[in-house]
Length: 264
Image (cartoon, rainbow, N blue to C red; front, side, top):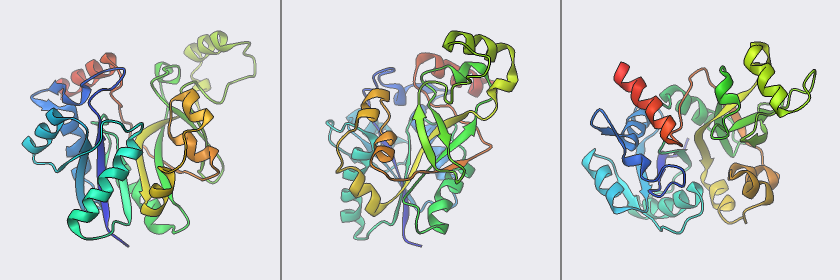
C-alpha cells in the first residue's frame, strides 16, 4: 500500500454561503471541525488544506494544519486538489498513491466513513475512485436540492447523482408535487433513497486523468463534477455507511449545525 494523504479543498467564495468555512461555532471554524474529524482517520498519513484565500491560510496555520495556496481560478475541488498534489509531492519528494478529498464543509463526517471509503481502494486494485452515501431517513432531505442523491447498481457503483429525488416513485404518483405530498405522509416511500456524502478517494493516476477531461453536459446541468466521471465511462464505487453527515451549503445548514454543537 502506497502513501495515503488527505487534501481538503477550502474555497472561500462559495456561491450559496460565501465565507462559510470561516464561520464560527463555539470558538471553532467549520473548516477546523472538518479537519478535526479527518485527523481521527486511522489510515490517513498526512493532511493538507488547499485554499485560494489568505484568511483561510492564516486560519489553517492557527489551528495547526498545513495549508497549500492554490489558484483562485479552479472550477472544481478536484482541480484544486490536483494542483496541491503537485506541490505536496515536490515538497515531500515522494509520490502519493491514494488521495482523500474531504469537502471542507463536512464538519460532522465520521472517521469510520473516511476509513471505509479508503479501504475500498486499498483492497481492490481495480477501483480508481470511491465515495460514500447514507440512507435518507427524513422527508426534508429527500426534496432538498442542496442534498445530493445517488442511485447505485447491484455492485455498489454509482449510476447517477442528482439534486432531485431519484428514482421517481411512479406507482400511484402523478407528478412531483403528488410524490412530495405522499412521501410526507407515507414513510415507506423513503426506503432506498441515498444521500451522497462529501468525500472522494482517488488513485493518483485517475485524478490526473480526470482533471484533464472537459466538463460534461450532465455535470453542467446538475452542478456536480462527479457526473463527469460517469459520463466518461468510469465507475465510482460507493460505500454505504451508517453514519450520517451534514454538508454546510446554506445558512439553514449552518444554523442546524450550530444548534447540534451547542446541545452537546
